[in-house]
Structures are given as structure tokens and as C-alpha cells.
Length: 266
Ligand code: 15L
Image (cartoon, rainbow, N blue to C red; front, top):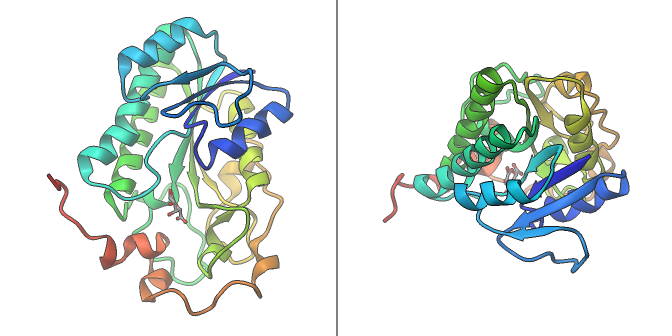
């Protein structure tokens, strides 16, 4: 497939872009920054929240799908979160409809349900109430709602991947449940890109962690079969570096008071 990857220079993009290329896909990169690899691949330096710039890019590039990774990967004020996650998604979806592109894979986040108490290792399904822990999570919920709207209105196939902790290896106790390995991340994106007619679908982008509390079946139904398990690092991660909020809510520290702030900072 010929795939646009937004946020291609970001922490996930730098793994997913070469991963998709290794699987035989042709990647068109888009980011606020130039191609960090200085390759020959097609690349657009733009803000994905700018509808005119996004439409111009689609007019120039024949595409089979979009992997939307762009977005501020941390908490911000509400206007920034909505521009970063909802406006970018809407601009891309409008361009997809205008230019006949049928598939979006979206980097959503576990923080859309981050304020859910996880109560030990009870499995959390994708059908639970969205329960964001931050304005970051609110922005991701809004983006997921846009995917649903465009799937219903325009028949776009749109897969929201609620990514956990995308890291080379777990760095703390919470990550034993939330880790998404780099290799599984590429598997997740590839499966979401190529699954037959998913319509609007949601999955948890998490590895097959022994201590995970996520229902991985919705991902498996789309062909995402995670291979890695954070448990192999259990002896290495610090056991006492997290406060009580880490233990109560699936969003970990994002759900704690350190992240409380007014919606409008300015
Ligand atoms: C995310 O969605 C964030 O982008 C990242 O900064 C981490 O907080 C990650 O989730 C996580 O939950 O570990």
C-alpha cells in the first residue's frame, strides 16, 4: 500500500515508518519536521491541523491509506489538545473523503479510558465508557468520535488504536501492564491497515503482557496478534517509583493530581 504517515518524525513514526517499509509498503511522510533519515521517500513538512495544507498534500499524492500518528504526546491545555488531536484528524478525514482514500489507522491512547479504576487485573473491554484522565485524553476521545462519524457518513474504514506505553522496553511497574513493544506496534499498524472492511473499530495497542488488564481480542479480530510480553523485564523495573494513582487508574500518573490544570491556560 502507499501510505501517508503523519507524525512520521515522532517517537512512534520513527519506528513505524521503517517497519511498514520493511513490510513492503511505500510511505509518504508528513511532519512539522523534515525527514530525520534524509531518505528519498516523499515527505511533507506541514501542520496536519491546517486543512488547506493537508488537502494540497492529498492532491499531490496518490494514497491507499493514512496512519495518523501526529499529535502532542502529552498533556496540554484544552485548545492545544483539541487542535493537536481532533482538528488534525478532521482535516485528514475531510481530505480522505475529497480524494477517495478509504482507510485511516489512528494513534489513539489508553488515556481515553485512563480514569477507569483497573481493580487488579480485571480485563478492560473496548466498549467501556470513555473516561479520559486529561485534556490529552479528551482530545483523543474527540478524535475517535470523528472516526466514528466519518465511518457512518462516508463509509471510511477507521481503526482507533488505543496505544499503551510505546517503548523499546518497560521502564516502570505500570509498564508491565501497558507496554507496547516496537515490534508489536508495527504489527498493530499493519493489521489495522490491511484488515478487511473494519468500518469503525477500536483496539487496545498493547503487547501480550502477563499483567495486562486490556481485552486484546478486538485487535486479534482485526489480525493484530501481539508477540511480546513485558513480563520478561519484570525483575529489571523499579517497584517503588510510582505513587498510589498508578495503582488505582489505568492511566497511571496522568490520572493523578499532578496533571490537574485549568482548561484554558492563556
Ligand atoms: C500516551 O498516550 C502518551 O502519549 C505517552 O506519553 C504515555 O503517557 C503513554 O500514553 C502511557 O500511558 O504510558
